Amino acid sequence: MKKTWKLRKNAEAVSPVIATILMVAITVVLAAVLYVMVMGFSQGGGANTPAVAISKTPTEVPAQYRISLVSITSTTVKPTDITIIVTPTLTHTGWTMSGSTNLGAGDYFLVNSTVSGTSYTIMLRYIPTSNSMGTLTFTAA
Image (cartoon, rainbow, N blue to C red; front, side):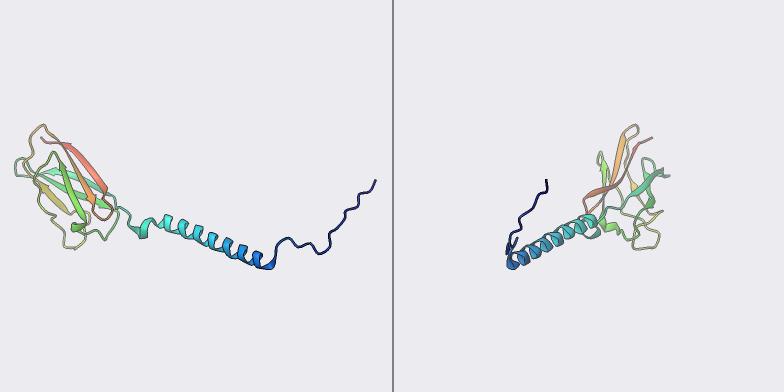
């Protein structure tokens, strides 16, 4: 048995005006999705938190340690972009730098008045993102 399909004459699916509106709406939605994806990947224009490796060295002054940057993942970090947090609270000096206006390996600060046998944690916080760049925990000798 052979089926025959009846075709409609003059049947249109969507009017040209509605088709144009739908195409514009789809284009706008796709552009918005692409924009959100691109902005999401850049994380706010590149304000990433640099990472640091830090070390401690006792100085000749009793109860004082030199906290040095071993490495840093950015060459554009200024000393004013970093907050030094020592727990429990101790006094510390400002950065002693090796000639550049940006921080780099070898730059250091001093932590004073440590108490023998006390464990200290030093955290460097990057001010633009409020994130930790690195920490160091040690027990004073």
